[in-house]
Length: 128
Image 1 (cartoon, rainbow, N blue to C red):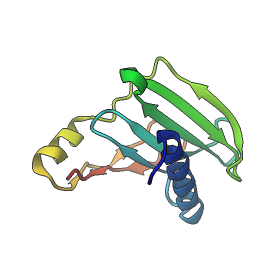
Image 2: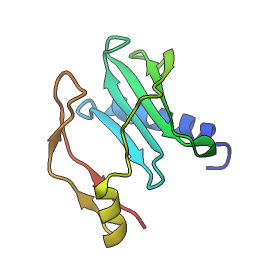
Image 3: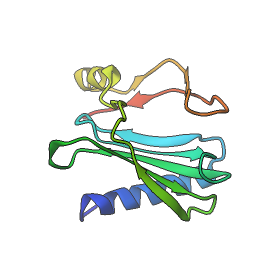
Image 4: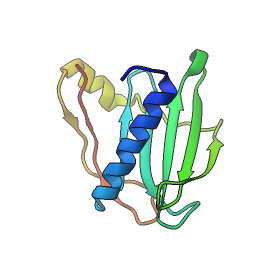
């Protein structure tokens, strides 16, 4: 994709929202970068019934910024927020391991504790 970082985020969010609409068994989809940037779209009833939340972590000018975009069940924007106290680090040890091994790394299944329905998940990373 050519364009600004925000255009990339907009296109990625549309794609992830489409995938969640097509695959009801997916709780969310994300991509994390070794530099700490992170983009995650998941189902969330926190702001709108059957809605979606997009969490974006980026580092403009080297400073971490965490934003949330909340959408209704049709994908229409409801509100946006920022979380300056967010401590999540997507550049976790599994990323380092996948970089070192240059292969797909799977985690053991775990519970997404931030989902009230306690979805089970796992994680795979591939770095080239």
